[in-house]
Image (cartoon, rainbow, N blue to C red):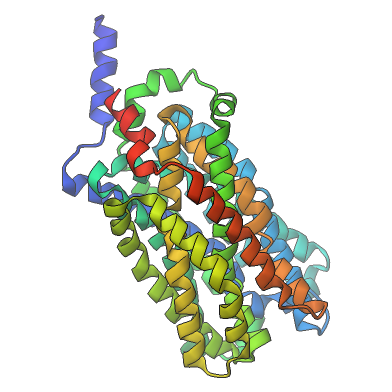
Length: 445
């Protein structure tokens, strides 16, 4: 070995994550913190849409205003495949840490744009255009964050507790929306009047998100690269992840099939549910916010529990649980929820739905990471997920509101049941990635 090669090897070892439990936990928490802030920024849009939509979409029809806001929400999803490709490529060629830092900085910029955008009354049609551009920036960021963070957490975690540790991505995803709702509750109940919240108070959460993203970017500078990447870094820098991904068509199709039902169910009971409780169930905005927040706390607690269960019984059993139970009970749950007049009953019905959905949300990112080898892992996780998420997750609100606007709201429950059934079939016929994980193969290589 030449002196230069020896120096390179030493440098690689120095940047490899130490394997002590404390270091693993620290790295996982920092990696997860970025995911939390990214999803907080992304969800703040839908949490506060009831208040800022009148500022950017003229008219008096609330459903039309919310539908317009939902279309821009979907725009953020449409560019997520581009973000998934760009950041997946960066993570697979230049390291997970670099991709994680850049994605959170981009989210900060998008949130700052929304916080500073003038209203329709001030600049006319330019206002919704600027909001749309900000959503595109956020969509690019989030498209990259998912694959990079899923890959990082899966590679950092030890084999015995990978389900538990990786479930923190789901925890922080839900926690991001929960924090957005908590801020909304504080503004609604304690700090601002409804008039103030509609006039300018909705800008506050986006300014907070921009600042938090910068803090996390600084924290991520301290992250070590994963051992799995450092082992193949000399190969990865010469690789073409997107071209190599064509060799893993079966794995890509599994990601697409699982994601279809999973993201549609997830966004039904997160981003859309607050509007559903207000516009369809008839609850007040403040009560709908409280119920949404309470159910998200319940959902958050389920994620590490299900992740730990997957370390014992495998990933496939949980995915089948989600598929079968979601197919059987989605229509009854949504019908009962629409018919109820009790806030407490609404909470228990949504909680029951989360007991089903957590079978997917807790482990979905890990399952996808376990499907692909190290050289294409971030791209393989991010790109097919982002494409499918844009088509199904990003349009969930728009489809539900459109069905409502034409007088056939119940049709949405059939749509949701159908896509969950597709995911169920995929889960039944796939291999259990706990026992066939490509992460372990690449780590031992």
